[in-house]
Length: 239
Image (cartoon, rainbow, N blue to C red; front, top):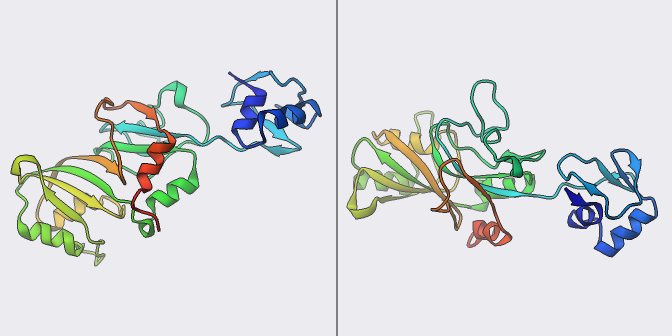
């Protein structure tokens, strides 16, 4: 529960003093009824609040999830559990959606938010926000594989990917690739490796921009992101 005056000020309706004046003047309604009680406790996730007849904007939230395999990146699905379904109750609220997709069997960093402008900025290829994955493969990466990624892998349907970075895994393990891409086509990383004759056995996203998956965050767990975390996504990608 949250005080009405605090709720309004946190959503841009004015300073605490200004919103207290609005409430006392009768300009604020809660669930359809005029409310002049500044310290009224409301449920921020379900209360219908207006100021001068205008609905109060949602407070934007940004959540890091270490997505598990077997869960789909969607708000709802008739067959499978979604990333919204497995959010802890204290983080759930109306309007949340996954910013971008991870395939059902892919693990790792996923951001869940209710900020559509943020999601568009993060996902647009024009913004050049890089996404990095660790891929375990059924064969070895060669110099030709690295060259193909650097020059843009071309799929069988004629689509040519943007140039991507491919590095061999730790300790020279050629069956592990660290892949950095700047777009997010359907099954893109899997299709890129498949075009080079390699099949992915396990795939995990570890970073978006300069925001890295928290190594202490268990699979399936979530945490709220700070303003600094959000800034890290776009550091070095200002366009």
